[in-house]
Image (cartoon, rainbow, N blue to C red; front, side):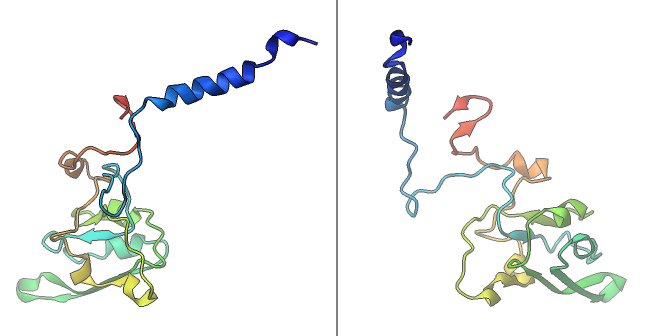
Length: 164
């Protein structure tokens, strides 16, 4: 038996404890303080820009779940007008294929992560609820021009500078 290794496990455990003892605490008081998530975060919402949307329906065709319902009609001057746009976020798996397939950059993944509800019907969003406006921030997922304008994340690890 080797008696010189007794206590080595305890010493290693204490070294880990001492290493983390003098770090800045990472706990936040959640309802009052919120962490800024990654710039490319695919939140559980979609943000729609009605000024860029032409009603082509590419997003609805690319959805593997078939959860995007888009109804268009001819408007004045022969342009297509989006009459109805509904997305059922209860069945959406937030894969981002609709965002990637939009040729006019009218659809974005959102930054929100607090979309829980008690009623399933509240997860079906229409075009007014999806529209880009105050309180709705698009994510930088698949949109590098949007990513450059977003604030830095305050999560635990920043890959360029190590631990925050």
